[in-house]
Length: 270
Image 1: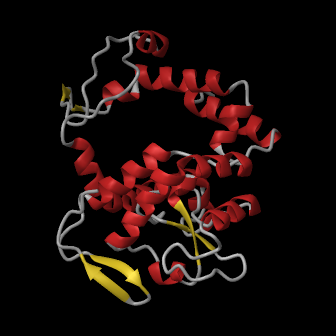
Image 2: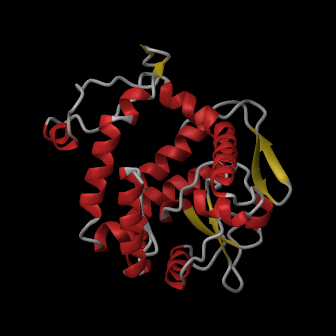
């Protein structure tokens, strides 16, 4: 039976990662010799088929997301050699995706899950199906990571600055339900404030403190990530947070402390 080349390569990488006990994609990237080979094959497949065809409506090409400027048969190696190996969104598309992302993501996940459940005979309500397809946000954070965050924050909660008792809670500063980002830059140590914050956006005072932490302690965070064998992505984390706040609607509740919220006057640019 013919199989998808992408699925075949991803399965190959997954099996190698399981054998080497890699916990994250970053670990696979740095530890597995086959990583670059698998990536080349997957990217070459997308260059040939999905990317040029995604904007075909009927028989007409409607470029509403990006422009494809390579002829059929072009390889990823050639695009890299010519400096054209990045897909550039059309003006305004990125902003609209930021606005629509939290709405579109659960809908896409639902429809994708329905199709997979129908094809495989797995119950749609099975939580293992969603975890397999999209991952889960409740990650078992290693002790080295928790200790590193605690040392950086002097053992205090990022939000209320009170001493953290016990292990504390590792919180996604920009909630996972909004943007799934496990990079260490998006993680803070908190006490019970983590439960009060939930998946809300935080007030401007917390936002400013988070941005200052990234500017001041970028190297320390990266070092903690290396020691904990965790992912680090300063640029992406900052871009996701700034883009999200740049599209906040007036009246959006921004969590400050406990049950206290501020109401956004409109987009927040930092």
